[in-house]
Length: 138
Image (cartoon, rainbow, N blue to C red; front, side, top):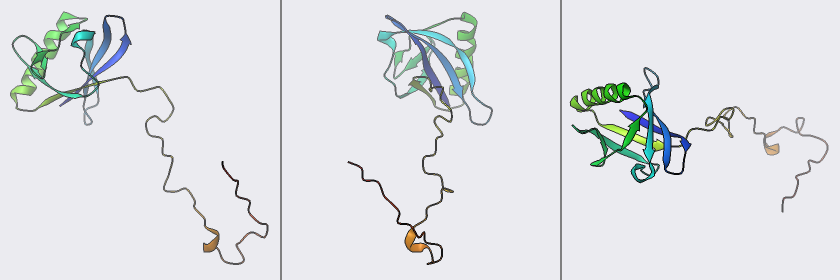
């Protein structure tokens, strides 16, 4: 199972973030909103998450997430505890939100259907009569 801790609003003492469950089959879902102090905020990588009696921990260290809603925290804890009990590993990715750009990140700069025509491949009738200028780039 993959969770994403998406940093939504940085502050001086920490960041406000959203915790998302990433599920390609059922769709992604927001589990809750948290505040993470800078000293508890891991680098932007993927970490193994464990559910303990005291709460959630990353690499054996408590997450220190302060949940916006206490009920969500309890629900997420029970949900992740059941996932862990089924022996499925839980990972959390710490990341920035994706930019709101058209086509991001699926911009194909080299599409397969882009026509590539070499002059040597053309027959004599298909070759242009005028010389083709190729601009010089410095």
